[in-house]
Length: 188
Image 1 (tube, one colour):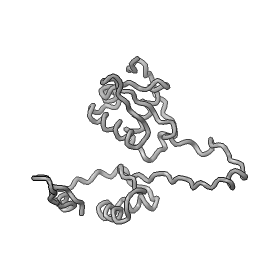
Image 2 (image 1 turned 180 degrees about the vertical axis):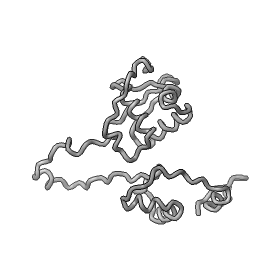
Image 3 (image 1 turned 45 degrees about the vertical axis):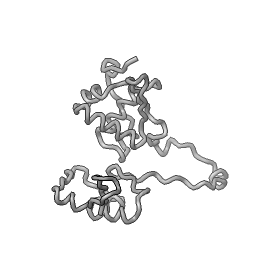
Image 4 (image 1 turned 30 degrees about the horizontal axis):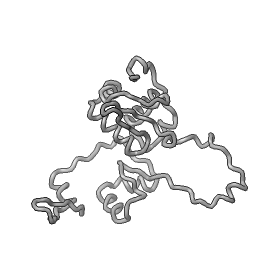
């Protein structure tokens, strides 16, 4: 049972996927394709298939899928040592607020469990789990992070700043380990 381009004649992209600010545009399209091909049996499409549709390289398609796995939108399992099955995690997709059931006032008062905060993800970093000093170092290196934390809009069209080797070398130092010839990188 293989999902091929003949089975995907069109693509409906859920508005909740489009509104999800944690996803890049390519991730949104890939997630919508996987959701369309899944149909509760799983998606068996290859990286080559995704690469053809998205007009990227198979390596880039693999990176996009891996990013969706890391962000807990999909799962990927290998069966029989070659057959990959990708499934959309149902609770990963945000839902419209107006579609939620209203909880009666009595149940709201009885509920004592604290609500979980939505993870704050910026460029793949889950900021909720980072120490304050690590966030401060990120703020110094990436000024746009300050605007992100304040909830201000960020210019997504801003090109990625590539750093020189000297700038990168200033962000870490090599620390010798007890293993012969092996050094550990420690970020400064």
